[in-house]
Image (cartoon, rainbow, N blue to C red; front, top):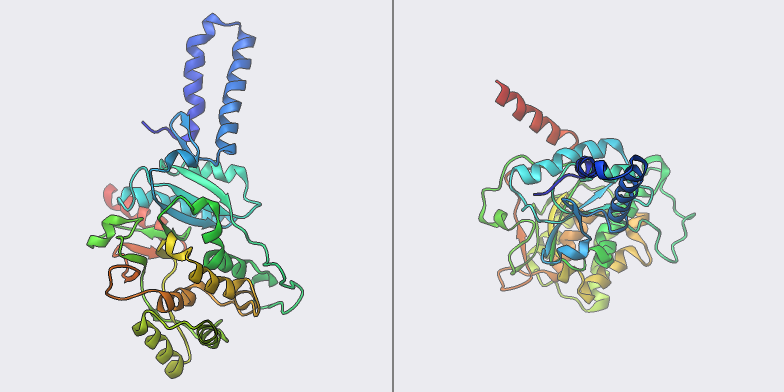
Length: 349
C-alpha cells in the first residue's frame, strides 16, 4: 500500500506508542524526533520521491521508461490548478500508478510547496531545478523587451528550457518518452482513441504527438521563418516532412503567420530530441546569435512544427509525427477545479 507523506508522522506515532512502555519518556521522544527527522531529510536529499514508508530515489524507478513532465512556476494559483491536474491524471486513468511525475521548478521554489505537491498524488514524484539562466555570451542589458510581463525575461527563459534545455537535463535521460503538460492542464475524461492507452508513451514509430498544427497568431514570430530557411540552406538540410514544410511555407506567404502545435500537451521521444542534428538546430535558436527565442520571443509552439518539418517523417516505420489531440484534454486556469466541483455536485444531486 502506498501512503501519503503526511501519514508518515501518524505511522511513527503508532509505532512509538507501542514501544514507549519499554523506554524512558525522554529517550522515546528523542528517538522519535531523530528517526522522523532522518526520514524527512532522506526525502529531500533524494529528490522528493516516495512510496509508502519506503522512501526511494528516482534511480529506483528506472523500470519506468515513460514520465509526465511539468514546469511549475512559483505562484499559488498555479499550484491550485496543479492539485486537480494530478488528481485527474489518475482518476481518469490517463497514466498508471507507477508512472513517474517529474516536476521542474525555479531555484527559489519553496520546500513547503514540494510537500504540498507530494500530498496530491500517489505516483512517484521528483523535483528538479530548471535552468532559467541566460546563455553564455548573451548580453542581458541589450535589447530588453519592455513589453514582457514586468519587464522580465521569465517567459523567454522558460521557452528556452523547453526548446533546448530540457533535453540536456539529467532528470529525463532515463526516459524514452516524456509527456509534457502544463500546471493548468486537465484530462476531464479518459481517452477514446487507441493511441491514448499508451500515455505517457507513444508507439515506437512516433517521435512526437500533439494537437495540430493549427494556424498561429502573427505575434512573436519576426524573423523566424527567414532564420529557418537560412539555417536549412547553410546546413544542407532538406525537410524530411515535405508536406508539413509546404504548409509552413504557404501559411507564411499567404497569411503572414506560422502554424503551431498545442505544446500544453505533447509527448516527446527523448532520443529524437537528443539527436545531434536536432540539438544543433535547437541550440541555434536559443544559444547563439541572433538569440531569437530571447530577443524576439520565438515560441516552442511554432518551433515544434518547424522541427517536425525539418526532421520528422510521414508514413514511414520511424520518426513519424502523430498529429492527434486527446478527447478529454482541456487547458486553462481553473478548468480542472470547475470540472471536479461540477462532478461532485452532480453526484450529490
